Length: 583
Image (cartoon, rainbow, N blue to C red; front, side):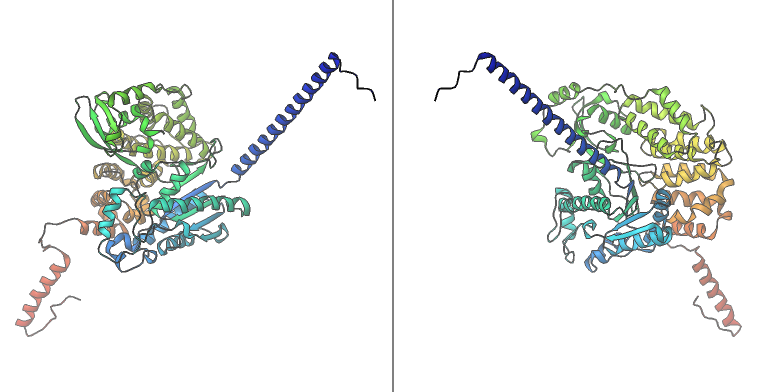
């Protein structure tokens, strides 16, 4: 058998060309297949995001027995703590607030199994929601309060001090949990809750979570990827505070939510800083509104310096360095010179994409003529983004004040509807803004009650609603700020009936500073007050401190007793008798 003929060069070249072409075709096919796979996954992820709940509302329980009496934990289980009378009223009030956010949309409640949360959810549902509206109420132990262990002993105060030293997220109580333990089960609950919502498709467009303050903060921590240090700066929400998480499909996040402060409460935060000045002196300062600094927050030195300067009244150039950890890591700190170099190496110029002053002014003017809530979300977002830059933050304050003073036209109802949604959202935006801006607080409140108030016959009610919903309910206001608001309010006596009709039921639930200022401000109009308002004033007057050992000889009871004593003496002289005891 003869050997096969040798391959010619042309044959080899042809085989190489054909083989290379086949390889190219195969590679192209694989790439196309991979691209199609990526596109399928992208579309699946986007479709999944679109089916997520429109809103997730986190609500803390109302005032409980344990909130009122800290010693009760020694004799009663934490899970058995019930609502107080005030807590029950708070639950009814927050139910109505939530109802205004979700309107007639179907909702799904998730509730912690503790008595105080179950009672809060019950009051919310029975007072504000129609039966058809609540598709389900799920009691889930994963969103319960942190387990503090056995509290019958006398060492709980010492354990609390230890937890403060080690920090709440890390410290594990004996026979109890740490904050990190609660974080783990909270994260597990969040993922399974979302999976259940996607699988069941029950028709609920909003999720309402009735839980505890720590649990709410940990839900936000896992959602917004806060560090433990940032978590420790966030304040515990007040009883029946509510945070509204609104879905925003323009975000690329896996769970595209942002905190809607127009609908719910603002998340308050503060951090203790050690500030070194140019003369090498140091001072420990508490900076409020730490979350307003864009992440990574510890690297945003120019923004932090500007916020400190605004809150404490010194020049940002006087600050040499900032220790965000209050001296804990002093041994491992970079030298100030290296820190300054690192800070100045980062770009600090304002992004080109941020709108300039005329655009923002036009945006606000345009938004005032619409009833679309999404328009005001854009306004809020623009204001928030500009706040991170000191120069733009000052412009924001000036523009809002000018708008409130009516320099660019009166604030009125949308002509084709007659509703004041534009003015309402503007006033809410202003109230939220000035809570963190004490330097313009008085001027903006004055503008609301003197300029905006008189622009249209329907606006006084909107101003009063905004003040109660977004200002006086805020724990961070000082007594002087509350007093300024109440003074301006009471100068408008023609609306006092509306005030009592709409808001007298909320008076007792206000923070202490607001209650004291309101009780004091109502006194000149006491003759026009309904009995509910008079009861509120009497209770606040009784709560005012008195010198130790002081006896009130002008109270009604003591006066009546003196009259009875005198009448008894007269009766004895005329052979009559009368009981000296007042029933």
